[in-house]
Each structure stands twice: as structure tokens, then as C-alpha cells.
Amino acid sequence: MTSSLLLAFREGLEAFLVIGIILTQLAKVNKKSLSRFVYIGAALGLIVSIVVGTVSFNEAKELEEGSEELFEGIMMLVAAGLIAYFILWLHRNSDVSASIKSSVNNTASGVGLLILSFLSVFREGMELVIFNLTQISNHAPSIATGSIIGIVLALGVAYLFVKATVKLRLNWIFKGLGILLILLGGELFAEGLVKLFEGGGEALEMIALAVFIIPSLYILLKNDIQKLRKSKNVAL
Image 1 (cartoon, one colour):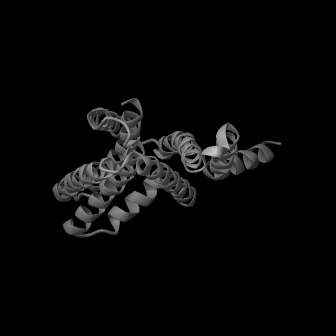
Image 2: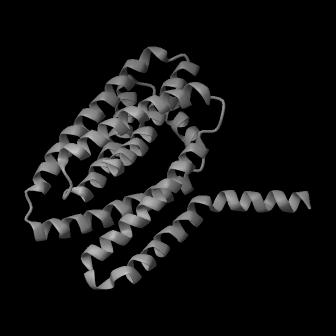
Image 3: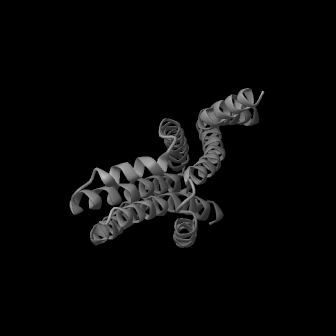
């Protein structure tokens, strides 16, 4: 339950933070009347994610024991790939908050905001579905309970963050979440390879961890490292 709780918390926090930024920006540009479209889109994204997740998990649970192990291994590698993609996206969009605000400013209609909020929640929901599909050998009620608790906690924390840190850069929050994701991605990548290539053992697991985590951390923190070096050179 702990792993599903943490995964749901991370994915939920990111989705709710994005929705919070959208609502905050609408208030700033005097378009608060369009907020209802954001709530509708977010609710639809959550509902569709739950339906797809429930159907996918139940179908996966029907697999035979040998196929179940293979399926989990493949889904672990897919989940690790999604994390790697997110890290690249975060590197290319260093100012996440500004990117979201720009999308809001360029979206004039309520339908556009509905689609934006729907996709923001649905994307994170699908990522959570894929992460949970790596645990089909576990009990479904335990995974569901952990996911629900994680999402509720994420909603509360996101609300506090948006209210308390509107004037601060939320990029560092996304960076922190990114670091947690990298560590999780490294574990998924390593476990997935071990499940698919059982003869690799601990050596394969350690190599896979290093191959995933070290480059990912460098990509995520590359811009910050360069800025730190430049500031030091200026100071000298």
C-alpha cells in the first residue's frame, strides 16, 4: 500500500498543482468566471482515469502466473520510460509555472480550458495507472486504498502550496518531485530488467540503477548546475 500511496501522492500533487496554477492565473487576468470549466475538465480527467485504471487492472489480474511476471516486468520498463520522458520534458521546460500561465493566457474559451485541465489530470492519471500495473501481483484493495489516500493527501498539500507559495517559483517543487521520480524510475528500471532477465541477478540490478539514475539526475539538474557555475565565476 505504501508504494501506491507515494505514487498517487506524487502524480496527484503534480496534477493538482497544475490546476491550482491555472485557477490562480485566471483570477489574475480577470477570467475567474471560466473557472467552472477547469473544475469540470479536472473532474472528467479524474473519472476517466479511474474507469480506465479499474478496467486495466482487473484485466491484467486475469493473466496466468507466468504471464503476470512478464507483464509486470514490461510495465516496469514502460513506467521507467515515462519517467525518463518527464525528466526530459522538465529539462526543456525549465519554467513550468510560466509555461502553464502562457497556455492559460493563450486559451480564450471555456472549452479550451476544459481540455487543458482534463489533459493535465488525465495524463497524471494514466501515469498512475501504468505505475499500478507494475503491482498486479499485489492485492487490489491495498493498491486502491493507497491510491485514494495518496490523492487526498496530494489535494490537501497542493491547496496549501498554491495558497502559500503563489509568489514563489513552483519549479523547485517540480524539481523535487522529479528527483523522487528518478529514484523510483531507477528502481522500476532495475526490477523490470531483473524480471525479464532473471540470470542477471544483483549485478544487473546495480548496473541498471546507475545507468538510469546518474544520467537522469544530470539532465534534470543540468541548468541549475550551469547557473551555479556562472554565478561562481561572476563572484570570482
